[in-house]
Image (cartoon, rainbow, N blue to C red):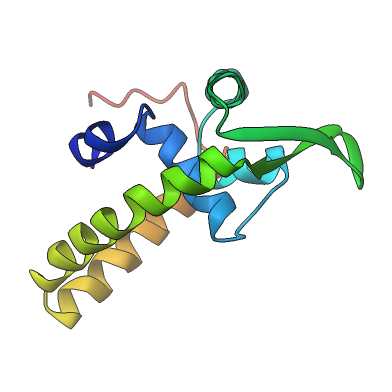
Length: 131
């Protein structure tokens, strides 16, 4: 994916994900986007700052919660999405075609379980994992 992106625009993989989520109307509030991406606040802030500086994204205070920002794509952001999305969609289809329906089902269930476990903090971090 990185190679396909870098051939077309000057975005990192994380920035592409921001572009994708905004384009698909999955989320526009900064906190919701950051949580969907699973990255920490400082990394997210760095990526958004770069995207604003490059002209891909605009920010404005989020009306429901002024501590957050509402992120929208600029014309440059929409053009970048249009330039990259078809190639990455084709790549995704190619990869998924290599799996059977059963394999895809198992993979998605495993990813969901790992994602849910990653959100939980009710584990013993002092436990000796080498035993």
